[in-house]
Length: 469
Image (cartoon, rainbow, N blue to C red; front, side, top):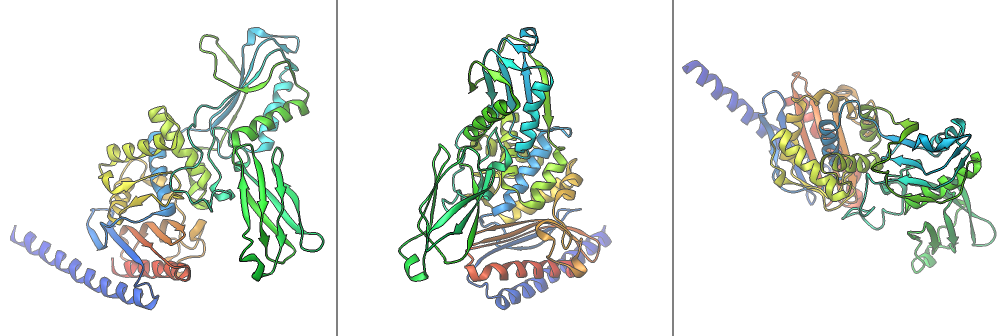
């Protein structure tokens, strides 16, 4: 027993000495990269034992940005079945069909597949006719009840929401709920809109003009899109030949409804009623006519993390809410995610505040120590390897493809996070001593000039952890 006590003493002593050395090196990095006025929180923990290896401001709240996707992914992998797929289905009452005519309603059910494309939807509708239905004496009823509530979560910046990366999640996701236009210079200082991609059923009003910097101070470029999918462009732009705009559809449900009308007409299916929203009949048994399925949950989660895809994140978050609580609202989603994390992994969710599933909200809050404790417990759980393998790998793919190359290549599996004033990095590191370490490095209150430096700082901190832990 005395030998064991002595061994523990020296182990703890060595860890203390190492932490002191690491602290000194990190403080030097803060000065080198001029980050003294930024808010910085760091924590690191050995995955095998849960031993805290390093901590600094580890209990302070930080905006996580896309590190928030970690919570969404953990909840999705925990709560959804391993064979989960999003589906888009066409159903009908088979007894009402004869000789090419359906004497009743046709039902199109959407579940919020963020990967669904317009061409896939067109092919799905084409298959209705290929299966024999040429005429519908009734309505084409759209079932879109998995997601509900406001499209835009609390805390999303108004300057972000017009753009594709902040496209709203809907049960009727199609073409990522985005469209692309190009503003081109024609004559004088006027611009003309050229429609590039997915602009069908979008109305565009453009009054923008080209102007020198002195005029643009009092002529701000502005993008406004109404709930009827009317895009209004106004103000002044720099004097150059063309501008590409990747924009978000304000009302995806309305756009998809109009698109379905167009596709039914184009494939030659006639209907006497309307293309309308509704519910599946409760008492009438329906037959599946055609069905489209998404990629596997693991493939979609991997895409979400590698591309930091906000639409995928919000769609999975709302799906978790709908599955667990029957509520596909953002509020239901965040409530369900926190409940899963608490019940399945035993962490204190008082240190986690979520307003969305993607991390675009400036109201999301987490502490570095919460992050590493959760990462440690998740790795040691049944979903640990699936989660680990889905994360971007240093020097190899995703948002880490060009970061931490050389001796750290492939040694870091982590999620980045970036918002105005925010840079975060959380995940796992395999050290030189072959120890797996969970870590979280969070920087808030950054100036524009500090954004690049913050990423270099994170890389250098990881190198220190690699050499010392």
